[in-house]
Length: 66
Image (cartoon, rainbow, N blue to C red; front, side, top):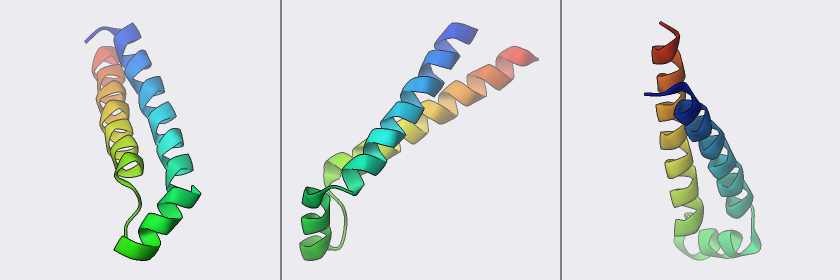
């Protein structure tokens, strides 16, 4: 994997995680948590996809350093 692509994936992953944390602290997510016990699907997807992108980007950065 190319280093610029790895950096981009890492940055996008961190941004998505930030949005996911923000979405999980929203009023809509609080209401969803009140009735269902879990945050909104949007918050969960942002966190999951952000983590995947960050892991892939970080792995690409480490693999490119060797």
